[in-house]
Amino acid sequence: MNALPTLLTSGAALVSITRTVQAVAVLSLAAVSVLARSPQRRRDARQVLALLLRRKHTR
Image (cartoon, rainbow, N blue to C red; front, side, top):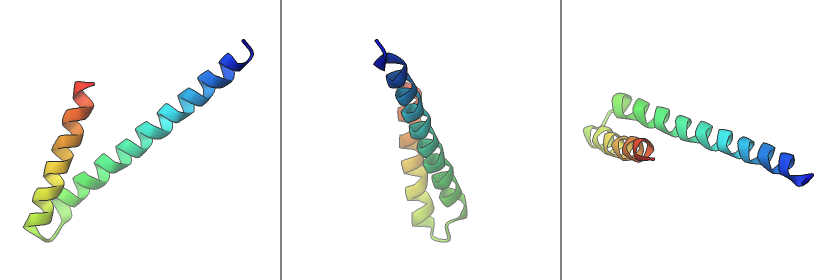
């Protein structure tokens, strides 16, 4: 029973780190999709961004 608060705290920290990494990835892909010089790179970034956001909303 003593390990339960530690596990909950560790789990919450892991979730927050995962969400932060995901937010950074989405923001950087959004920036690339707007700021990239090559049209192909912008198109690729938009496709990856669409995949990430679609998966995020289905959960």
